[in-house]
Structure formats: C-alpha cells, structure tokens
Length: 313
Image 1 (cartoon, rainbow, N blue to C red):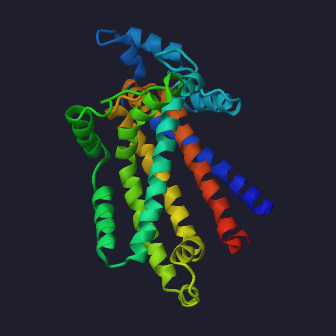
Image 2 (image 1 turned 180 degrees about the vertical axis):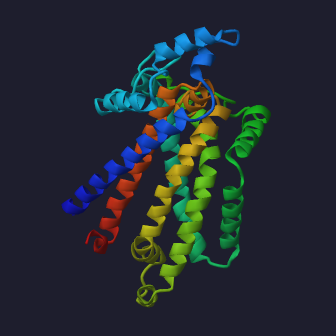
Image 3 (image 1 turned 90 degrees about the vertical axis):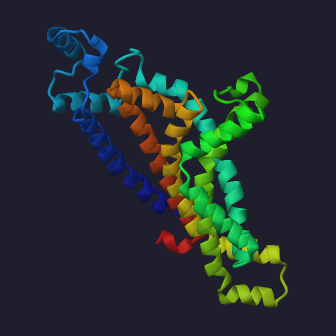
C-alpha cells in the first residue's frame, strides 16, 4: 500500500509541471496588455513601454518564465500587478469563502445524492425511480447561473427568507454564516447532485443483479443491510470516481456562483484578475485550482486501493 501511494505521489509532479508551463505561456500569448490597462486609455506609447519595463514584461518570454518558475520553486508566486501584494497573500485572503462554499456543497450534494441513487436503484422502474431520473436530467441540463437567479428571485426577493448576496464569515456568527451559504450551495450543488445520483443508480442496478445479492435476500437479511453493506460497498468505485470528476464541475461552477452571489472568494478573484490581465494572480489561481484537482484525484486513487485491494498491484 505504501509503495502504491508513493508511486501516485510521484505521478503528480509531472502533471503540475505541465500545468505550470501551459498556464504561463497561454496567458502570455492571450490578447490584452496589462501595461496598457495600468497606463490608462490616454497613455502614450512611451508611457506604456515604461510600465512594461517596470513590470518586466519587456523581457523575453523564456526569461520571464525562468524567473517565475524559480520563485515558484521557492514558494513565491509573484506580486499582483495592480494591488502590488504577494499573490499568496491575495489568495489566502480570499480562500475562506471558497472553501466554505465548496465544502458545504460537497456535504449537501454527496449526502443527498448517494441515498437518492440507492433508493432509485432499489425501486427501479417505479415512481420514485422516474422522479429521480427526471431530477437528474433536469438538474444536469440547467445552467448554474439560471438556477441561481431562480433561487434568488423566490427565496430572497419574493419570500425574503435568505439574503440576496454576500458572505458572512463564521467568526461573525454561525447562523448568518449558514444563511449566506444556503442559496449558493444549492445552486452549485444541484448539477453535482444530479450527476452523482445518476451514476449511483446505474452502479447499484448492476450490483443488485449479482448472485451474491440474490443469496443475501434469500437468506432473509434486512433490506437496509443488503443495500448498504453488500450492494453499496461493491458499487462504491464508480461512485467515488464520479465524485472526484465532479470536483472539476465545482471549480468551474465556483467562478459563476461567486460572481452571481457577490461572494469575495477565489472565483470572484479569478474574474477580476482576468479582466485586468493580472498575470501573476491568474497564474497563481490556476495553479491552486489545478493542485486541488490533482490532490482530489490522488485521494480518489488511494481510496480505490481500500475499496478494491486488487488495484494496489
């Protein structure tokens, strides 16, 4: 098991190296000049050139990459072009809202989707199953921002049950903190929940047709014991896989959700940095998102070895 984990850890390094290389050069060849944005609309060519020289953007791209990579290896992601603050500091300031939103969405989505999928498989081709599949199709097809505005209109504007926008840190009170996360978590989690429920149902249906499940039922074991201990355990690998894949949906959905609900997290920071062509911030954010995705995949791979010991070899 230790050897398997070590192999997976070493496999992460080339992935992150490719991501860093791709991100840096993709941003440099994208249209837009941060020096022109800083200098202003009425700036002369000489002023823009001076700003570019001050920012180091006049150097060869390879040299810029070498400087950035050397700093990155020492834990330095650079300095924001516009705020003149360290990228690590800016990201750390915006990390809490994004972590709170992501974790709350994961808890709600996984906690509801897996039981729903299990019940749908148990009651296959009945009313419950049809309702779950209808929800899965509708939830996966509806864009996050459309659902977000629908939730805001009814729960915040019409019924005034929840705040329209904003984020309350947990230090300012637990209930205001929860209230500020309910609507964005639901808007972000419906698509994720629909995907997990659908895969859980399909995986459970396949397992429930196996001989050992029929044997367990013939022995008179309780239904919940058969479903949870025998069927769900053996159907867990595809479910865990789709949970890991869905993290990518959460990362992309966080950008949209935080913009709609005016949450000052990493998603909102990404939008602002892209509009300003703040290269260091965008590079740092993409690396953070990529590292989070890679680490989730690593955790998923390790969990496979516990769920199915054959995968270790």
